[in-house]
Amino acid sequence: MLVICEDCAKKYHIEESRIKGQRAKFACKACGHIIVVEKPVGADSPPAAAELDAAAAKAGAASVQPDRRKTADPVAAAAARGRGKPFLLWLMAAMAVGLLAVGGSFLHLYSRELATLLAQERELRSLALALSLKEAVKTSLLRQDSSLITQETERAALLPGMAYAAVINEQGAAVAGLFNPQAGFDSRFIQQVKEKGFPVEVLAQNGLKAGAKEGSVLLSIGGLPVHDRVLALGDADGEIHIGIPAAGVGQMARQAMLSQLFLVSAGLALLVAGLILFLADWLVVRPARTLTNIANRISLGELDLAITVEGSRELRDLGAALERMRHSVRIAVERLTAKRQ
Image 1 (cartoon, rainbow, N blue to C red):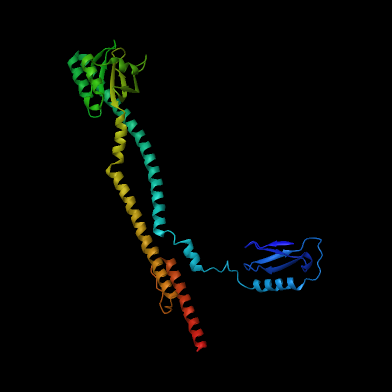
Image 2: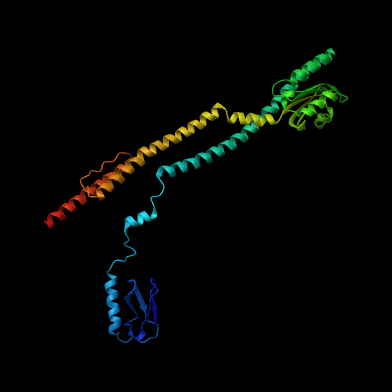
């Protein structure tokens, strides 16, 4: 019967007839591992010979010896595992991930809601400007003063944040119209407007349907996305168009992100994170280092070194438990020394 040691793979040839009972144990001569041999079913079991008895005796002797694999030096085992990462590093990593997750979610929701609010503000602003220009144009129409219509249209077009303002008569011709040069239109487009006049065909994309009084749509004019608002002057008096750059909404959102309120909030978050790190260092890290230093000195023989720890309640309780252990060890050492003497 061939038996192989599970640890060192050393082979042994054992006769089945020499096994007493159903199983036998013996220690490997090479590594000391305890080998259990079970007798095959149906095999004879005569009394074992002296050779297997000796192997069993060695197995019994080895069974009382401690397993060398399980009694490794704990200091060496801890050194092999490494010291690990500092607690503050783990805490900083966790706080950084948390701040990024919370801050990213907040910024995403804030920017989305802010864009919606700014779009609504753009709608209201364009409607208010269109109504204001409509009233001025209607008064000028009653007076039949075309120069006043042109002045009011130019005044509306040159307001901050405006792209253009235009008045279209019932025949579809431009009574007055002006593009704001500060809006960011393509220079070639502005030059074409100066040469050919106001491009009424562009505003026709947002023309009022029969019976409609107002409307709004996003147009692309001169390389610039523009929110166009149109109002009817009357039943058959023409239309008023007010344009506001749509890109201004994103710019306003970015400015809001960099506002003092946002920067102060970010600064307060960093200040709170720094305060948490300081408290963790003061209440946990420093007392733990103190306990480590004292334990190292006691392990070197300074049994009279009292353990006193400041910090959180848990670490103070740990220090008190270690102090009781140190006191017990010192008394035991003193007793052993007295017996030897």
